[in-house]
Every structure is written in C-alpha cells, then in structure tokens.
Length: 207
Image (cartoon, rainbow, N blue to C red):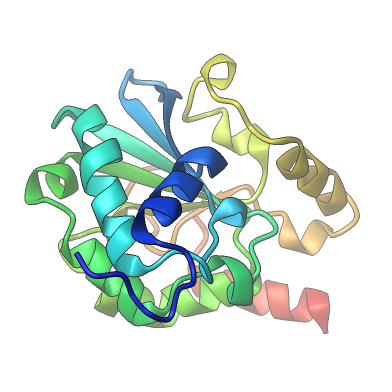
C-alpha cells in the first residue's frame, strides 16, 4: 500500500501512533454480556493518519478481536475538535463501506457519549444517507456517564478523566443534559425524545 503523500508520517509510523494512542479498545461488556468496542474520539489524530491506514489497522487489529459475535460500541465524542480529530465525510463513508459484513451484522448498539449540537445536526440530516445497512438506527445519544452505566458494565470500562470533567460542566448547562436519547423514538422501547425537540431545546439553551 502506497503512503498518502499528504501525510508526513510513514504508514508504519501511522499504525504505531494509532496503537500508542489507544483510540480503539475492546474493553469490558455491556449489560447483556456483549463485548464493547470503546472509541476515544479526542485521541484520533486526523491530520496525521490517513483513511487507508486506519482501515488497515481496524482490519488487522480490531475486527478479529470481535470474533464475529454480537458487540456494542461506545464512542466518546467528549472534547472532539472537528479540525483535529475528525476524518472527512468521504473518509468516514469509505471506512464504513469497508467494514466486513460479518462485523456490521453483529453490531447491536452504538452509544454516542457527549454529542454536541453540531454532531446531532450532522447525524440528523446526513447520517441516515451516509451510513446504510441499518447503522443509523442503532445510534443512541448518551449525554451523561450515569446513563451509559445503564447499558454497559461500569466496573469493566475505563473512562478518561476528561469525560468525567465534561459531566461536571454539564451541571451548569442543564439544557444540554437530556439523558439517553434517540433519533428514532420507540425503536428500543421506553421513552425517547425525538431529535427535532432536542435541537429546538438546545438552540434555545445557547441563544
């Protein structure tokens, strides 16, 4: 695989960087015993790692550990900066399309921790078009860690200190604290708030 000339690090250095930063970890289990893939968005070096290297890393280091069994994802969006930590839309789509069908079929839920207003808007408007195969319907927003523990085993998951700090900040921003939400009410059972209401309340809160 040729190295993307727009990235200064070699392919092997990019792979080593992903490993050192520990962005992707198979860690703990959810409340029904499925493995959890923990993704720390803040640690992803989008300016230093190409989409091709990321795909190769996932294929070789992460997917095999899932063992083609049902699993859940916890994605921590806490303190993510768009310019520093997010790949482009085309890269995200390419990575998603290259996920083996056996992995896609075994993904049960994606818990999106600490989503910001921009992330909500992006996923509400483009998510269902960018991510096919039912991925979007498995997405659930989790604005506080206390609600995450309703779904994963707290004693088995290591959450970085900055995520707890963000939770404390939410004490002073009550309009951004809605608990566990979904863009598709009723899909999981229980009472979920429709995203249109979330965006309305969020906008009022920051006006």
